[in-house]
Image (cartoon, rainbow, N blue to C red; front, side, top):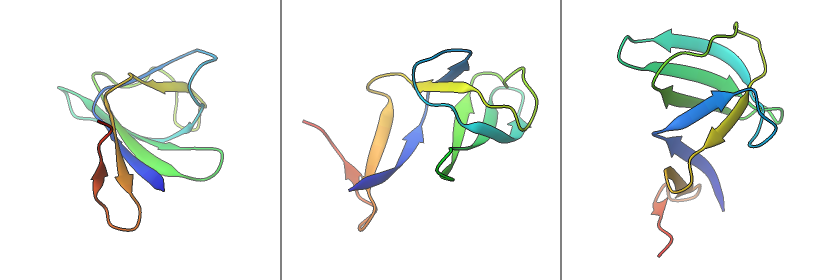
Length: 84
């Protein structure tokens, strides 16, 4: 079973596709931003994005992951799952 993933190239915008987490915290680090998000089922994750979102903390945003750029992990072992 996979429940964790690392996003290297996420995107957020007003959209109906993907899922809609709430912004908990934004760390603007100049070259990129770390956006701390919380899903409706209370799963927390951090997305590294090229620029910070333009909406305020507490806002719900549309978020998607570009196909092929998400990495999935086995929750029991922490081993990355590779689809060959």
